[in-house]
Image (cartoon, rainbow, N blue to C red; front, side, top):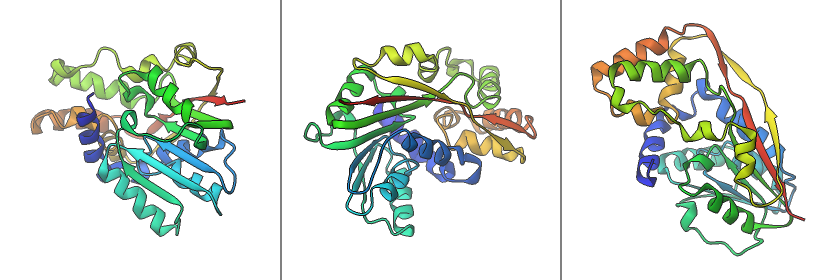
Length: 259
């Protein structure tokens, strides 16, 4: 997707992004931060921060005296992050609408740089990682989280099977996120030492309507917005047919510590 498409997709998804059915965003955001060593007084940069799943816990961790800067393309998600920061009385978190490839900070500016579920959107992932690494100060940590194999199943397969039936022209044979679900492929993007940790997780889906809510609050929204009303109803029906089941949310955590 282009930058404009990413901003539009997640801007539209903001209406569902923070609903309980998508609680995995916050859970995995906290687990991303847990891989860092954020402490009071430190500086944190959150790349592709969304609505603050890792940035807000980071702001709590570095208070007092520390500061968190989150950057993202989607203004509606940033509005959600700012509202949550206000509700939590967090005055040390700043959220900026920006393309990370265009932002500038001095080298060695941050104790921690985080990027949860955003790496696969960059056109040159290796170059973007190098830029993140430049911003990490000696003794600091870079933590990048991506989806592992079978993430968001059984919704992922069900959704794309349904899209294939009604709009085969929209079917994505290869998903960029899937390329990174292999730990070796993820490691190969890093030009500096990195450890890859796998974390397996899942959540129960009791209400069938939640399957569609999850689709509407995630990257599937880009495809949904291209469907006609009739096509959308057919894809939605396929997702609801999953009934009560378990959503898989495994992730890979790439952790690099600068000596």
